[in-house]
Image (cartoon, rainbow, N blue to C red; front, side, top):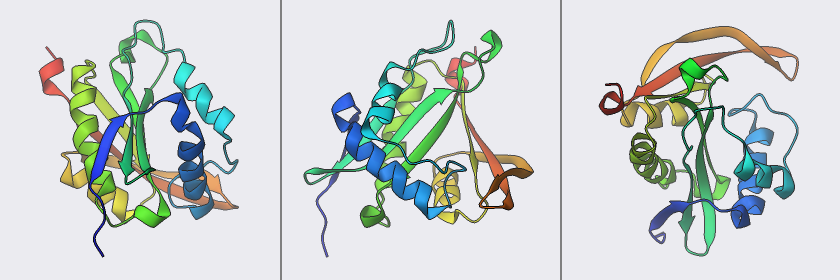
Length: 175
């Protein structure tokens, strides 16, 4: 079955309901986040007014559209509040269940990385469950490196879970 092309653009607050729906699929799936409380469109809309740490850079927030629907999103957010970390961001990427396997994550990442560089970020990081092979493969294809594992990093549904730490540097901004 042929699918329409994926188009990536900057997210807007009008995308909040669909972003929330996709995030909630990830929460229910228990393979992408320690979060257990589903998010409303109002919760997600607050992400658009998130005040960065003093001196922090603007964080890219993109969505992928396929046909008439948002089918994925990727977002950078503050890593730590200390001034020394102002050019480092964490990121999250989520793809709608119905769009998985269509390279939506690749399209998002291909647009997101240049946006992060343009924003002046020096590094992006994430923590990924070891069994989330799709996310780990996405990172490997886009130049991330595994820097370690946090063992028993958090408890989800009564079970301690490890996370793999990945990072992607932007050497062009590390001068």
